[in-house]
Image (cartoon, rainbow, N blue to C red; front, side, top):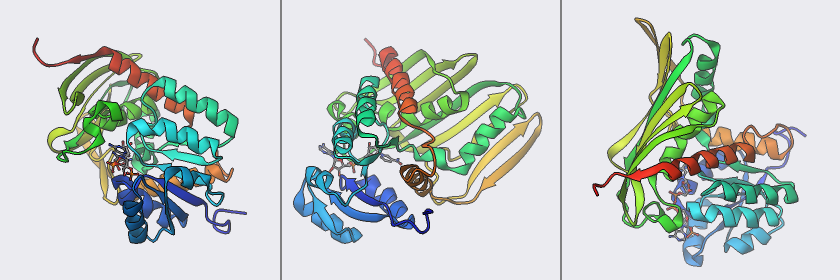
Length: 328
Ligand SMILES: NC(=O)c1ccc[n+]([C@@H]2O[C@H](COP(=O)([O-])OP(=O)(O)OC[C@H]3O[C@@H](n4cnc5c(N)ncnc54)[C@H](OP(=O)(O)O)[C@@H]3O)[C@@H](O)[C@H]2O)c1
């Protein structure tokens, strides 16, 4: 049975939160998925959310996982809830699409690997940016040789977090800018080089309830240098990513958040410059489509827990080198 004639995959969503509402529900709907239930800590809020989105059931997380008419769950919870609910979902026989960062450290990913091996289900870290065609094009440019030998990569991802109540401010909930947004340029640097980073330097400003609210990271991927900054104390949304070769460079103007907008890759070779344009797409939908194909056995998951483990190990190494920037 192909994707068009197969019955829709049946989904449960854990957490009646923002990204679920703004990105995943529209992507799943566009993909023709069946949204069976929303899981929410608060029954009344869950009912309201379910009603607004036309989801038949609002349940506790545990009751959602106990349902037999759910094949896959999307975990859109704060970061420290990713491990326990991924393990619970696997134990209940569900496939798992979980938000980034999948885990708070490499040890958590290893626990997921064991649980996954026992369950035979899939776990995918929801780095939706990788499904945008501009990323494949950037990889092709870097590996095709037009830019010469890759020397350096640089990037940024930051925004202004104004909400006083948000798990991102709280270290006990997996808060901080490196987990929230720094993970994206790190992930893209790993994708482009296929290498593990050496961590040269990490500086961060402390804020909120003791998390990194602004961080600068300097890495080495073999001979290739990489640096990025990230934060949620910036005046406004700020993101770019650039690769620099011995012959030329290429810069993405919207590397990470690129849903529904035309995007550009500016390529400079010597004195010449061209702009490659990409039509608006929904990377979340492309991610869901790939995940569903993998669940149905029609494709191998492009990035599994091995990739998530390397990402978590790289983040562990970054946190191990972090120096707070305040004066002593
Ligand atoms: N891929 C992307 O583009 C993208 C964008 C933004 C965020 N994210 C990731 O998505 C996840 C959720 O982010 P979000 O902005 O959507 O979060 P959010 O709306 O603040 O929270 C999501 C859910 O987590 C639970 N939660 C939040 N704070 C909690 C607390 N203090 N105690 C217990 N439960 C709490 C709540 O579940 P209940 O509804 O059950 O109460 C809430 O609805 C994070 O891992 C984040 O890194 C990804």
